[in-house]
Image (cartoon, rainbow, N blue to C red; front, side, top):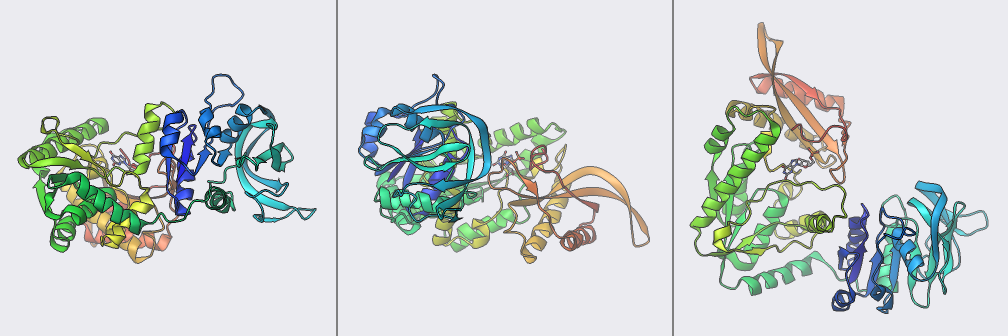
Length: 517
Ligand code: XMP
Protein backbone atom coordinates (compact mmCIF):
# COMPACT_ATOMS: atom_id res chain seq x y z
CA UNK A 1 0.00 0.00 0.00
CA UNK A 2 0.96 3.56 -0.68
CA UNK A 3 1.33 6.39 1.81
CA UNK A 4 0.49 9.85 0.50
CA UNK A 5 1.76 12.74 2.60
CA UNK A 6 -0.31 15.88 2.22
CA UNK A 7 1.41 19.25 2.18
CA UNK A 8 -1.88 21.06 1.71
CA UNK A 9 -2.39 21.03 -2.05
CA UNK A 10 -5.91 21.43 -3.38
CA UNK A 11 -5.46 18.32 -5.49
CA UNK A 12 -4.01 15.80 -3.03
CA UNK A 13 -7.23 13.81 -3.12
CA UNK A 14 -6.74 13.33 -6.83
CA UNK A 15 -3.42 11.58 -6.22
CA UNK A 16 -5.24 9.11 -4.01
CA UNK A 17 -7.97 8.70 -6.63
CA UNK A 18 -5.44 7.88 -9.35
CA UNK A 19 -3.64 5.37 -7.13
CA UNK A 20 -6.92 3.67 -6.22
CA UNK A 21 -7.84 3.58 -9.90
CA UNK A 22 -4.70 1.51 -10.41
CA UNK A 23 -6.31 -0.87 -7.87
CA UNK A 24 -3.71 -0.10 -5.24
CA UNK A 25 -4.75 0.80 -1.71
CA UNK A 26 -3.49 4.13 -0.40
CA UNK A 27 -4.10 6.56 2.42
CA UNK A 28 -3.57 10.30 2.71
CA UNK A 29 -1.98 11.59 5.92
CA UNK A 30 -0.65 14.93 7.16
CA UNK A 31 2.92 15.68 6.08
CA UNK A 32 4.21 15.79 9.65
CA UNK A 33 3.69 12.13 10.54
CA UNK A 34 6.71 10.76 12.34
CA UNK A 35 9.02 7.81 11.98
CA UNK A 36 6.89 5.53 14.16
CA UNK A 37 3.85 6.13 12.07
CA UNK A 38 5.68 5.44 8.83
CA UNK A 39 7.18 2.25 10.19
CA UNK A 40 3.79 0.97 11.37
CA UNK A 41 2.11 1.93 8.11
CA UNK A 42 4.76 -0.09 6.33
CA UNK A 43 4.23 1.51 2.91
CA UNK A 44 5.47 0.02 -0.35
CA UNK A 45 6.04 3.55 -1.56
CA UNK A 46 5.49 7.17 -0.49
CA UNK A 47 4.13 10.10 -2.48
CA UNK A 48 4.71 13.69 -1.36
CA UNK A 49 1.96 16.03 -2.52
CA UNK A 50 2.10 19.58 -3.76
CA UNK A 51 1.43 22.59 -1.57
CA UNK A 52 0.75 26.29 -1.64
CA UNK A 53 3.94 26.82 0.39
CA UNK A 54 7.38 27.71 -0.81
CA UNK A 55 10.16 25.20 -0.15
CA UNK A 56 12.97 27.73 0.14
CA UNK A 57 11.35 29.74 2.92
CA UNK A 58 12.43 28.70 6.35
CA UNK A 59 9.02 28.36 7.90
CA UNK A 60 7.89 25.70 5.46
CA UNK A 61 7.05 22.12 6.17
CA UNK A 62 9.37 19.27 5.47
CA UNK A 63 8.88 15.57 5.18
CA UNK A 64 10.12 13.47 8.08
CA UNK A 65 13.66 12.21 7.36
CA UNK A 66 12.15 8.76 7.87
CA UNK A 67 10.51 9.16 4.45
CA UNK A 68 13.91 9.05 2.80
CA UNK A 69 15.29 6.40 5.15
CA UNK A 70 12.43 3.93 4.82
CA UNK A 71 14.12 2.14 1.93
CA UNK A 72 11.04 2.45 -0.30
CA UNK A 73 10.48 4.45 -3.51
CA UNK A 74 9.45 8.08 -3.04
CA UNK A 75 7.70 10.29 -5.57
CA UNK A 76 7.61 14.04 -4.93
CA UNK A 77 5.04 16.05 -6.85
CA UNK A 78 5.52 19.82 -7.28
CA UNK A 79 6.23 21.09 -3.74
CA UNK A 80 6.90 17.43 -2.88
CA UNK A 81 9.73 17.42 -5.40
CA UNK A 82 11.04 20.75 -4.12
CA UNK A 83 11.17 19.65 -0.51
CA UNK A 84 12.79 16.40 -1.62
CA UNK A 85 15.47 18.41 -3.44
CA UNK A 86 15.96 20.80 -0.52
CA UNK A 87 16.09 18.07 2.13
CA UNK A 88 18.53 15.92 0.18
CA UNK A 89 21.03 18.69 -0.43
CA UNK A 90 19.83 20.39 -3.63
CA UNK A 91 18.53 23.96 -4.04
CA UNK A 92 15.17 25.57 -4.68
CA UNK A 93 14.69 29.18 -5.76
CA UNK A 94 11.90 31.43 -6.97
CA UNK A 95 11.47 30.90 -10.71
CA UNK A 96 11.99 33.85 -13.03
CA UNK A 97 8.73 32.96 -14.71
CA UNK A 98 5.62 31.53 -13.11
CA UNK A 99 4.42 28.48 -14.94
CA UNK A 100 0.75 27.99 -14.61
CA UNK A 101 -1.38 25.69 -16.71
CA UNK A 102 -0.52 23.76 -19.83
CA UNK A 103 3.14 23.02 -20.58
CA UNK A 104 5.12 20.68 -22.76
CA UNK A 105 8.05 18.98 -21.09
CA UNK A 106 10.87 17.15 -22.75
CA UNK A 107 11.81 13.85 -21.17
CA UNK A 108 15.58 13.43 -20.65
CA UNK A 109 17.59 10.39 -19.73
CA UNK A 110 15.95 7.07 -19.67
CA UNK A 111 14.38 6.57 -16.31
CA UNK A 112 12.13 3.82 -15.17
CA UNK A 113 9.38 6.32 -14.33
CA UNK A 114 9.02 7.94 -17.75
CA UNK A 115 10.54 5.41 -20.14
CA UNK A 116 8.27 4.83 -23.11
CA UNK A 117 5.63 7.25 -21.84
CA UNK A 118 5.18 10.18 -24.21
CA UNK A 119 2.47 12.21 -25.92
CA UNK A 120 4.44 13.09 -29.03
CA UNK A 121 7.99 13.28 -30.40
CA UNK A 122 10.05 16.45 -30.02
CA UNK A 123 12.21 17.98 -32.81
CA UNK A 124 15.10 15.64 -32.00
CA UNK A 125 12.97 12.55 -31.63
CA UNK A 126 12.84 12.84 -27.85
CA UNK A 127 9.68 12.03 -25.88
CA UNK A 128 7.45 15.01 -25.07
CA UNK A 129 4.74 15.12 -22.42
CA UNK A 130 1.70 17.38 -22.25
CA UNK A 131 1.41 18.32 -18.61
CA UNK A 132 -0.21 20.68 -16.19
CA UNK A 133 2.08 22.88 -14.11
CA UNK A 134 1.33 25.24 -11.31
CA UNK A 135 4.36 26.65 -9.59
CA UNK A 136 6.46 29.73 -9.03
CA UNK A 137 9.51 28.14 -7.39
CA UNK A 138 11.73 25.58 -9.02
CA UNK A 139 14.57 23.26 -8.24
CA UNK A 140 17.77 25.05 -9.33
CA UNK A 141 20.35 22.52 -8.18
CA UNK A 142 20.03 18.74 -8.08
CA UNK A 143 20.79 16.88 -4.90
CA UNK A 144 23.69 14.42 -5.06
CA UNK A 145 22.89 11.24 -6.94
CA UNK A 146 20.06 12.77 -9.03
CA UNK A 147 19.80 13.25 -12.79
CA UNK A 148 17.46 15.50 -14.75
CA UNK A 149 14.47 13.49 -15.92
CA UNK A 150 12.56 16.20 -17.82
CA UNK A 151 12.76 19.90 -18.59
CA UNK A 152 10.99 22.89 -20.10
CA UNK A 153 12.62 26.11 -21.39
CA UNK A 154 11.68 27.99 -18.20
CA UNK A 155 12.19 25.08 -15.83
CA UNK A 156 15.34 23.15 -16.69
CA UNK A 157 14.79 20.69 -13.86
CA UNK A 158 11.12 19.83 -14.41
CA UNK A 159 11.64 16.30 -13.14
CA UNK A 160 14.53 14.50 -11.43
CA UNK A 161 15.44 10.98 -10.45
CA UNK A 162 17.86 9.03 -8.32
CA UNK A 163 17.29 5.54 -9.60
CA UNK A 164 19.59 3.85 -7.12
CA UNK A 165 17.52 5.02 -4.20
CA UNK A 166 14.32 5.01 -6.31
CA UNK A 167 13.55 8.68 -5.56
CA UNK A 168 11.63 10.60 -8.21
CA UNK A 169 10.42 14.17 -8.38
CA UNK A 170 8.13 15.81 -10.93
CA UNK A 171 7.42 19.53 -11.02
CA UNK A 172 4.19 18.97 -12.97
CA UNK A 173 1.01 17.40 -11.63
CA UNK A 174 0.47 13.84 -12.89
CA UNK A 175 -2.70 13.53 -10.77
CA UNK A 176 -4.78 16.03 -12.77
CA UNK A 177 -6.45 14.89 -15.95
CA UNK A 178 -4.89 17.74 -17.98
CA UNK A 179 -1.61 15.85 -17.70
CA UNK A 180 -2.57 13.38 -20.36
CA UNK A 181 -0.20 10.59 -19.42
CA UNK A 182 -0.47 11.35 -15.70
CA UNK A 183 -2.46 8.25 -14.88
CA UNK A 184 0.11 6.10 -16.66
CA UNK A 185 2.99 7.77 -14.82
CA UNK A 186 1.38 7.20 -11.42
CA UNK A 187 0.60 3.60 -12.36
CA UNK A 188 4.19 3.10 -13.40
CA UNK A 189 5.27 4.38 -10.01
CA UNK A 190 2.97 2.31 -7.82
CA UNK A 191 2.91 -0.91 -9.83
CA UNK A 192 6.35 -1.17 -11.45
CA UNK A 193 8.56 0.88 -9.19
CA UNK A 194 6.92 0.21 -5.81
CA UNK A 195 5.88 -3.28 -6.85
CA UNK A 196 2.32 -3.04 -5.50
CA UNK A 197 -0.15 -5.65 -6.68
CA UNK A 198 -3.27 -4.26 -8.34
CA UNK A 199 -5.65 -6.13 -6.05
CA UNK A 200 -7.75 -3.37 -4.47
CA UNK A 201 -11.28 -4.08 -5.64
CA UNK A 202 -14.77 -3.28 -4.46
CA UNK A 203 -15.69 -6.97 -4.31
CA UNK A 204 -12.88 -7.63 -1.86
CA UNK A 205 -13.70 -4.47 -0.02
CA UNK A 206 -17.31 -5.52 0.56
CA UNK A 207 -16.29 -8.96 1.79
CA UNK A 208 -13.69 -7.62 4.20
CA UNK A 209 -15.90 -4.77 5.39
CA UNK A 210 -18.73 -7.20 6.16
CA UNK A 211 -16.42 -9.42 8.20
CA UNK A 212 -15.04 -6.41 10.03
CA UNK A 213 -18.54 -5.13 10.87
CA UNK A 214 -19.51 -8.56 12.22
CA UNK A 215 -16.37 -8.76 14.31
CA UNK A 216 -16.85 -5.28 15.75
CA UNK A 217 -20.57 -5.34 16.34
CA UNK A 218 -21.01 -8.93 17.52
CA UNK A 219 -24.58 -9.35 18.74
CA UNK A 220 -25.12 -5.63 19.41
CA UNK A 221 -27.79 -3.46 17.86
CA UNK A 222 -26.92 -0.67 15.40
CA UNK A 223 -28.83 2.54 14.53
CA UNK A 224 -28.34 4.50 11.36
CA UNK A 225 -29.79 7.84 10.28
CA UNK A 226 -30.88 7.20 6.72
CA UNK A 227 -31.26 10.26 4.50
CA UNK A 228 -31.90 8.60 1.17
CA UNK A 229 -28.59 10.02 -0.09
CA UNK A 230 -25.92 7.77 -1.56
CA UNK A 231 -23.58 7.55 1.42
CA UNK A 232 -26.08 6.66 4.10
CA UNK A 233 -27.92 4.29 1.73
CA UNK A 234 -24.79 2.35 0.87
CA UNK A 235 -23.76 2.24 4.53
CA UNK A 236 -27.19 0.86 5.41
CA UNK A 237 -27.04 -1.80 2.70
CA UNK A 238 -23.55 -2.87 3.75
CA UNK A 239 -24.33 -3.13 7.46
CA UNK A 240 -27.58 -4.91 6.72
CA UNK A 241 -25.66 -7.44 4.66
CA UNK A 242 -23.36 -7.96 7.66
CA UNK A 243 -25.72 -8.07 10.62
CA UNK A 244 -29.26 -8.16 9.19
CA UNK A 245 -31.95 -7.25 11.69
CA UNK A 246 -29.50 -5.98 14.26
CA UNK A 247 -29.61 -2.78 12.16
CA UNK A 248 -32.44 -0.28 12.49
CA UNK A 249 -32.56 2.69 10.14
CA UNK A 250 -34.26 5.90 11.19
CA UNK A 251 -35.57 8.14 8.44
CA UNK A 252 -36.72 11.61 9.45
CA UNK A 253 -39.14 13.15 6.97
CA UNK A 254 -39.03 16.91 7.47
CA UNK A 255 -41.62 17.51 4.79
CA UNK A 256 -39.03 19.20 2.60
CA UNK A 257 -38.01 16.16 0.57
CA UNK A 258 -38.33 15.54 -3.14
CA UNK A 259 -41.61 14.24 -4.55
CA UNK A 260 -42.33 10.68 -3.32
CA UNK A 261 -38.92 10.46 -1.70
CA UNK A 262 -40.13 8.95 1.57
CA UNK A 263 -42.16 6.35 -0.33
CA UNK A 264 -39.14 5.44 -2.45
CA UNK A 265 -36.96 4.97 0.60
CA UNK A 266 -39.60 2.73 2.15
CA UNK A 267 -39.93 0.75 -1.05
CA UNK A 268 -36.18 0.21 -1.50
CA UNK A 269 -35.12 -0.48 2.04
CA UNK A 270 -38.16 -1.95 3.75
CA UNK A 271 -39.96 -3.73 0.94
CA UNK A 272 -37.16 -4.79 -1.37
CA UNK A 273 -34.28 -5.26 1.01
CA UNK A 274 -36.25 -6.25 4.09
CA UNK A 275 -34.60 -3.82 6.47
CA UNK A 276 -35.98 -2.57 9.76
CA UNK A 277 -36.96 1.03 9.08
CA UNK A 278 -38.45 3.61 11.41
CA UNK A 279 -40.05 6.45 9.49
CA UNK A 280 -40.76 9.61 11.38
CA UNK A 281 -43.13 12.06 9.76
CA UNK A 282 -42.02 15.25 11.46
CA UNK A 283 -43.23 17.66 8.79
CA UNK A 284 -45.71 19.35 11.15
CA UNK A 285 -42.98 20.16 13.63
CA UNK A 286 -40.54 21.47 11.03
CA UNK A 287 -43.11 23.57 9.22
CA UNK A 288 -44.51 25.07 12.37
CA UNK A 289 -41.01 25.91 13.68
CA UNK A 290 -40.21 27.53 10.33
CA UNK A 291 -43.34 29.65 10.33
CA UNK A 292 -42.58 33.33 9.78
CA UNK A 293 -38.82 32.74 9.47
CA UNK A 294 -37.27 34.24 6.35
CA UNK A 295 -33.55 34.52 7.15
CA UNK A 296 -31.67 31.72 5.34
CA UNK A 297 -29.20 31.08 8.15
CA UNK A 298 -31.97 30.97 10.76
CA UNK A 299 -33.90 28.53 8.58
CA UNK A 300 -30.86 26.26 8.29
CA UNK A 301 -30.30 26.37 12.05
CA UNK A 302 -33.92 25.50 12.82
CA UNK A 303 -33.94 22.61 10.37
CA UNK A 304 -30.63 21.31 11.72
CA UNK A 305 -31.75 21.55 15.33
CA UNK A 306 -35.13 19.91 14.69
CA UNK A 307 -33.43 17.16 12.76
CA UNK A 308 -31.08 16.32 15.61
CA UNK A 309 -33.97 16.40 18.09
CA UNK A 310 -36.16 14.09 16.02
CA UNK A 311 -33.38 11.66 15.33
CA UNK A 312 -32.26 11.53 18.92
CA UNK A 313 -35.72 11.04 20.33
CA UNK A 314 -36.23 8.06 17.97
CA UNK A 315 -32.78 6.71 18.73
CA UNK A 316 -33.49 6.80 22.45
CA UNK A 317 -36.44 4.48 21.97
CA UNK A 318 -34.08 1.84 20.65
CA UNK A 319 -32.73 1.10 24.06
CA UNK A 320 -30.62 -1.86 23.05
CA UNK A 321 -28.52 0.08 20.53
CA UNK A 322 -24.79 0.18 21.11
CA UNK A 323 -23.60 1.54 17.77
CA UNK A 324 -24.40 4.58 15.67
CA UNK A 325 -23.55 4.03 12.03
CA UNK A 326 -22.65 6.95 9.77
CA UNK A 327 -22.00 7.27 6.07
CA UNK A 328 -18.76 9.22 6.48
CA UNK A 329 -16.63 8.93 3.33
CA UNK A 330 -12.94 9.53 2.66
CA UNK A 331 -13.17 13.12 1.40
CA UNK A 332 -14.96 14.02 4.69
CA UNK A 333 -12.14 12.38 6.63
CA UNK A 334 -9.42 14.16 4.67
CA UNK A 335 -11.27 17.48 4.95
CA UNK A 336 -11.68 17.31 8.68
CA UNK A 337 -8.11 16.10 9.17
CA UNK A 338 -6.92 19.02 7.06
CA UNK A 339 -9.16 21.37 9.04
CA UNK A 340 -7.56 20.10 12.24
CA UNK A 341 -4.07 20.79 10.99
CA UNK A 342 -5.34 24.16 9.67
CA UNK A 343 -3.98 23.34 6.22
CA UNK A 344 -7.10 23.36 4.14
CA UNK A 345 -8.27 26.70 2.92
CA UNK A 346 -11.88 26.09 1.97
CA UNK A 347 -14.01 24.05 4.29
CA UNK A 348 -17.73 23.74 4.21
CA UNK A 349 -19.62 22.66 7.24
CA UNK A 350 -23.03 21.30 6.55
CA UNK A 351 -25.34 19.76 9.03
CA UNK A 352 -27.03 16.59 7.92
CA UNK A 353 -26.29 13.95 10.41
CA UNK A 354 -28.21 13.52 13.59
CA UNK A 355 -25.09 13.08 15.66
CA UNK A 356 -24.60 11.08 18.81
CA UNK A 357 -27.17 11.39 21.56
CA UNK A 358 -24.62 12.09 24.30
CA UNK A 359 -26.34 10.12 27.07
CA UNK A 360 -26.68 6.98 24.99
CA UNK A 361 -23.00 6.15 24.94
CA UNK A 362 -23.07 4.91 21.39
CA UNK A 363 -19.96 3.91 19.55
CA UNK A 364 -19.40 5.13 16.01
CA UNK A 365 -19.46 2.71 13.11
CA UNK A 366 -18.23 4.19 9.83
CA UNK A 367 -17.60 1.30 7.44
CA UNK A 368 -17.10 3.36 4.27
CA UNK A 369 -14.84 6.06 5.69
CA UNK A 370 -12.01 4.88 3.45
CA UNK A 371 -13.90 5.19 0.17
CA UNK A 372 -14.23 7.88 -2.45
CA UNK A 373 -17.62 8.79 -3.88
CA UNK A 374 -17.29 6.75 -7.05
CA UNK A 375 -16.11 3.77 -5.02
CA UNK A 376 -19.15 4.20 -2.78
CA UNK A 377 -21.35 4.14 -5.88
CA UNK A 378 -19.69 1.00 -7.22
CA UNK A 379 -20.19 -0.66 -3.86
CA UNK A 380 -23.83 0.43 -3.82
CA UNK A 381 -24.45 -1.24 -7.16
CA UNK A 382 -22.74 -4.40 -5.95
CA UNK A 383 -24.96 -4.46 -2.89
CA UNK A 384 -28.02 -4.32 -5.13
CA UNK A 385 -29.16 -0.74 -4.63
CA UNK A 386 -31.11 0.68 -7.58
CA UNK A 387 -29.04 2.56 -10.12
CA UNK A 388 -31.20 5.71 -9.84
CA UNK A 389 -30.50 5.87 -6.14
CA UNK A 390 -26.77 5.27 -6.47
CA UNK A 391 -26.32 7.90 -9.17
CA UNK A 392 -28.73 10.44 -7.77
CA UNK A 393 -27.67 14.08 -7.66
CA UNK A 394 -26.71 15.40 -4.24
CA UNK A 395 -29.51 16.85 -2.16
CA UNK A 396 -28.83 19.27 0.70
CA UNK A 397 -29.62 18.26 4.27
CA UNK A 398 -32.11 21.14 4.75
CA UNK A 399 -33.82 19.99 1.55
CA UNK A 400 -36.42 22.21 -0.04
CA UNK A 401 -36.02 24.48 2.97
CA UNK A 402 -33.17 26.21 1.11
CA UNK A 403 -34.96 26.02 -2.25
CA UNK A 404 -38.06 27.87 -1.14
CA UNK A 405 -36.83 31.42 -0.81
CA UNK A 406 -37.94 33.21 2.32
CA UNK A 407 -40.69 31.73 4.45
CA UNK A 408 -41.32 28.02 3.98
CA UNK A 409 -44.95 26.96 3.62
CA UNK A 410 -46.45 23.57 2.89
CA UNK A 411 -48.31 25.03 -0.07
CA UNK A 412 -45.01 26.23 -1.60
CA UNK A 413 -43.30 22.90 -0.90
CA UNK A 414 -46.08 21.02 -2.68
CA UNK A 415 -45.80 23.20 -5.79
CA UNK A 416 -42.02 23.01 -5.80
CA UNK A 417 -41.91 19.22 -5.43
CA UNK A 418 -44.08 18.77 -8.49
CA UNK A 419 -42.19 21.30 -10.61
CA UNK A 420 -38.88 19.72 -9.59
CA UNK A 421 -40.08 16.23 -10.44
CA UNK A 422 -41.10 17.36 -13.94
CA UNK A 423 -37.69 18.95 -14.52
CA UNK A 424 -35.84 15.81 -13.36
CA UNK A 425 -38.16 13.56 -15.37
CA UNK A 426 -37.48 15.46 -18.56
CA UNK A 427 -33.73 15.57 -17.91
CA UNK A 428 -33.72 11.79 -17.55
CA UNK A 429 -35.86 11.29 -20.63
CA UNK A 430 -33.52 13.46 -22.70
CA UNK A 431 -30.40 11.68 -21.42
CA UNK A 432 -29.16 14.80 -19.63
CA UNK A 433 -29.53 13.73 -16.00
CA UNK A 434 -26.24 11.85 -15.84
CA UNK A 435 -24.40 14.51 -17.83
CA UNK A 436 -25.06 17.27 -15.30
CA UNK A 437 -23.84 17.25 -11.72
CA UNK A 438 -26.88 18.65 -9.98
CA UNK A 439 -30.23 19.93 -11.19
CA UNK A 440 -33.30 21.14 -9.35
CA UNK A 441 -36.07 23.72 -9.22
CA UNK A 442 -36.25 26.70 -6.86
CA UNK A 443 -39.46 28.32 -5.65
CA UNK A 444 -39.66 32.11 -5.85
CA UNK A 445 -42.42 33.54 -3.68
CA UNK A 446 -43.22 36.38 -6.04
CA UNK A 447 -46.26 36.52 -8.27
CA UNK A 448 -46.45 37.67 -11.83
CA UNK A 449 -49.22 38.12 -14.31
CA UNK A 450 -49.93 35.58 -17.02
CA UNK A 451 -52.64 34.56 -19.40
CA UNK A 452 -53.96 31.03 -19.72
CA UNK A 453 -56.85 30.20 -21.99
CA UNK A 454 -59.14 33.20 -21.69
CA UNK A 455 -58.21 33.98 -18.16
CA UNK A 456 -55.66 36.13 -16.42
CA UNK A 457 -53.40 34.39 -13.92
CA UNK A 458 -51.43 35.85 -11.05
CA UNK A 459 -49.14 33.06 -9.88
CA UNK A 460 -45.73 32.09 -8.56
CA UNK A 461 -42.39 31.70 -10.35
CA UNK A 462 -40.08 28.70 -10.48
CA UNK A 463 -36.38 28.93 -11.41
CA UNK A 464 -34.57 25.94 -12.86
CA UNK A 465 -30.94 25.36 -11.90
CA UNK A 466 -28.57 22.87 -13.50
CA UNK A 467 -24.81 22.87 -12.99
CA UNK A 468 -21.73 20.97 -14.02
CA UNK A 469 -18.89 20.60 -11.56
CA UNK A 470 -16.42 18.08 -10.25
CA UNK A 471 -15.93 19.34 -6.71
CA UNK A 472 -19.00 21.52 -6.07
CA UNK A 473 -16.65 24.34 -5.02
CA UNK A 474 -16.89 25.91 -8.46
CA UNK A 475 -19.56 25.19 -11.04
CA UNK A 476 -20.74 26.16 -14.50
CA UNK A 477 -24.39 26.42 -15.44
CA UNK A 478 -25.36 23.68 -17.88
CA UNK A 479 -25.97 24.64 -21.48
CA UNK A 480 -29.19 22.64 -21.72
CA UNK A 481 -30.87 22.55 -25.14
CA UNK A 482 -33.58 25.19 -25.62
CA UNK A 483 -36.03 22.50 -26.72
CA UNK A 484 -35.59 20.68 -23.48
CA UNK A 485 -35.98 23.85 -21.41
CA UNK A 486 -39.05 24.74 -23.46
CA UNK A 487 -40.65 21.39 -22.82
CA UNK A 488 -39.96 21.55 -19.08
CA UNK A 489 -41.41 25.04 -18.89
CA UNK A 490 -44.55 24.03 -20.79
CA UNK A 491 -45.15 21.01 -18.65
CA UNK A 492 -44.62 22.87 -15.37
CA UNK A 493 -46.95 25.70 -16.31
CA UNK A 494 -49.62 23.33 -17.63
CA UNK A 495 -49.42 20.71 -14.92
CA UNK A 496 -48.61 22.66 -11.77
CA UNK A 497 -51.49 25.00 -11.08
CA UNK A 498 -50.12 27.95 -9.15
CA UNK A 499 -46.98 28.41 -11.28
CA UNK A 500 -47.24 30.55 -14.39
CA UNK A 501 -43.63 31.46 -15.10
CA UNK A 502 -40.38 29.48 -15.37
CA UNK A 503 -36.87 30.96 -15.52
CA UNK A 504 -33.47 29.36 -16.09
CA UNK A 505 -30.57 30.32 -13.80
CA UNK A 506 -27.47 31.19 -15.82
CA UNK A 507 -25.13 32.12 -12.97
CA UNK A 508 -21.84 30.37 -12.35
CA UNK A 509 -20.30 29.57 -8.97
CA UNK A 510 -18.61 31.76 -7.99
CA UNK A 511 -20.09 34.31 -7.70
CA UNK A 512 -23.46 32.57 -7.20
CA UNK A 513 -23.69 29.45 -5.05
CA UNK A 514 -25.34 26.31 -6.37
CA UNK A 515 -28.28 26.53 -3.97
CA UNK A 516 -30.14 29.83 -3.80
CA UNK A 517 -29.99 30.08 -0.01
P1 XMP B 1 -23.56 25.71 -2.53
O1 XMP B 1 -24.98 26.18 -2.54
O2 XMP B 1 -22.83 26.10 -1.28
O3 XMP B 1 -23.64 24.12 -2.52
O4 XMP B 1 -22.83 26.09 -3.78
C1 XMP B 1 -22.59 23.24 -2.80
C2 XMP B 1 -23.12 21.84 -2.68
O5 XMP B 1 -23.47 21.58 -1.32
C3 XMP B 1 -24.84 21.25 -1.23
N1 XMP B 1 -25.36 21.84 0.01
C4 XMP B 1 -25.58 21.13 1.12
N2 XMP B 1 -25.43 19.82 1.35
N3 XMP B 1 -26.18 20.13 3.57
C5 XMP B 1 -25.73 19.33 2.55
O6 XMP B 1 -25.61 18.13 2.74
C6 XMP B 1 -26.36 21.46 3.42
O7 XMP B 1 -26.75 22.17 4.34
C7 XMP B 1 -26.05 21.99 2.11
N4 XMP B 1 -26.08 23.24 1.57
C8 XMP B 1 -25.66 23.10 0.28
C9 XMP B 1 -25.48 21.80 -2.47
O8 XMP B 1 -26.67 21.10 -2.79
C10 XMP B 1 -24.37 21.59 -3.48
O9 XMP B 1 -24.33 20.24 -3.92
